[in-house]
Length: 73
Image (cartoon, rainbow, N blue to C red; front, side, top):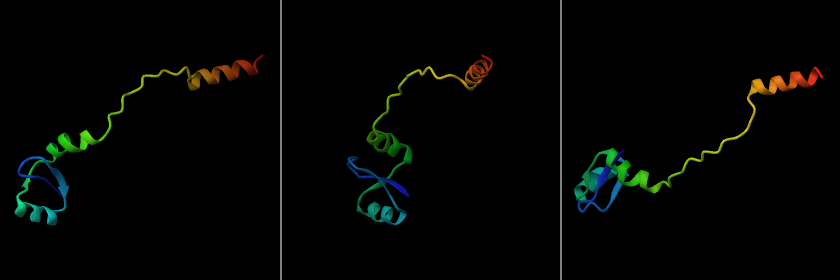
């Protein structure tokens, strides 16, 4: 796979090696994959905002302790 950008910089694409050689003859140029990641891949994916929800779940030890205390009653 190769990363290519059009001469005017409006189009950045990832293509196979064979297609890259054809595009190079048509005026595209090779660029780094990190540039593609920055400009195309990461922009297209929606950013998920982390949710900081805390739950009041008991730990395994707390559950075990509660079960033991119920048996002893």
